Image 1 (tube, rainbow, N blue to C red):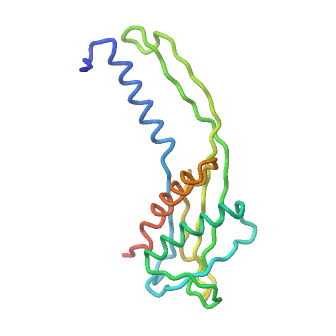
Image 2: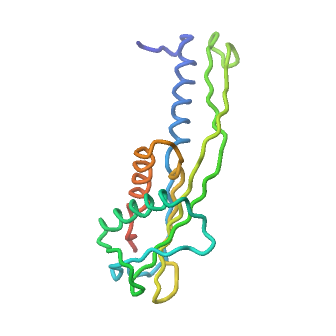
Image 3: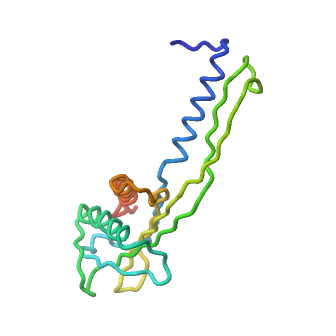
Length: 182
């Protein structure tokens, strides 16, 4: 089907395309990271999991899933996990799950103008989870790398979907680890 600019279908097709683009943007994972300039990341070979003092943590099942996902990514970067206090890096995380309103809207048009026709909007509540991952150098007692991934922890009854979402987010978050320095 070909949509012509002068037709009455064009505004509806344009509105549908914009709605699909917006929906894709709303569900995309957003990752950010920062690191201490001048840090020699090549010297880090081992890491140990630590708890962050007052940080929020999920239940034991989700905790294991998060650690498994991060462990997999760090292993692919050449880091080995240890329980020794002599680890090169201490790694910890925090999570937060907030609720947001999501609006689903559609319209049925009348004519070429935007104001015509009928439209329906429906609000639903969605959980938006953020995971913050921190890496500390215990020798200098300093944070050397931090990153966050939003829309990472979205509790659902589908464990496979949760794990795939988490794995995808951790791969995206740790894609640029170790950071390239100028």
